[in-house]
Image (tube, rainbow, N blue to C red; front, side):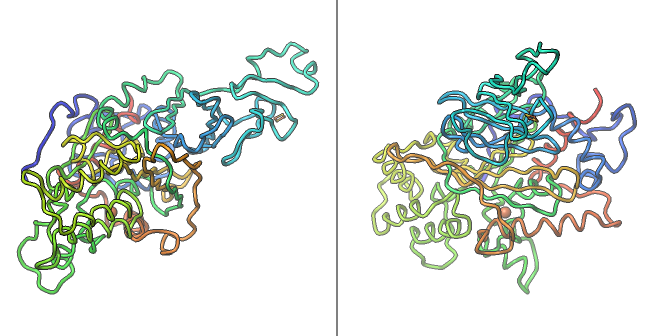
Length: 484
Ligand code: FES
Ligand SMILES: [Fe+2]
């Protein structure tokens, strides 16, 4: 396919070209060689040095808009969930149907964390477990035992109010920022907003959510999901012919005709990015059967079934069942198998009053692709479904992170969404706990991190096209870390 581009969405500002930090300083000092972002590669100290991790906490995580929760983790008034990043803890609480707030998770009396995990504040009373001070969900203090003993009996409400953070609900996410003087959320999200709006991400509801500790740097983990270049080797079941070429006995020539080779990548201002397959996605009916003479509906359905069985996300069983109803039916003139599949999906959704993405070519081209929200969220949308990843650094160890997978879908109007709660995975290699496709992806991460500690590697190499989003990530991180 010819790669398409949409110039109006291209990055216009914020990325620094070339050797991004040449001549730049950090805290007045020259940037160490091992921390440099190069146009063709990333120096490995960025993945392994504890000092670099600390700098990320000091200059990135304290300044950037970040996803603290999915809104369906707090569906009812007084529901709360905590969010931890580095050594900072915040809790998100739903005040009423239209208001969600974020507070630093600390009691102003003697510092006790007010919330743990996820739950509901009964009656909207936030009560400190140590001495029983109490607040409402607006953050106003409502009770202090022996109040007259504090500050000579002149304690002001503002002395003891909970400290809120900037907080915005958008597209089903609760975004927060630790910096009171942060740039506006609207500016932050602007480069990808129209895509996210047209994908109708605000309608996605909890299906399942898993959380796992991973022995790799947080950027190593997310970069494993920034390209489809890894698909033939890591997910051979999804690229049988290309995988045979990689792993088979007869190796000669170049095999470039694999599905994922057609993927296009874009980077945007503020570090965001996306990839998408455009017209080559098999939702457009471009299906190459793995078996000679196979019925095209079977070929397409068998391929999508691999995603249902391998992830239970993005494509769900009911989607494949609908596709199979097309078997044996003639394709009307001017349509295609992909077109007919989209037709039955949308007819079925309309009959159930279930919200769907906008059915326009640019949005359908995003099915099977990904939107990367800087610094750490990836959204993989489909027809009324989306898989979402979030990665967070470990508080002190650059070789560890927390990886979460949210499988979401829109629901018929009559179905009440369930409250989202995480399942904590104890063994990512256990097929009972983790589906095949993420097991394959996550299985690489420990090996990558191990390799990055080798004395024989100074930098990783980046493909200019397939690994463009990785470069964009590091360039934007540098924009936060480096001195002005
Ligand atoms: S520490 Fe919270 S009431 Fe004392
Ligand atoms: Fe993968």
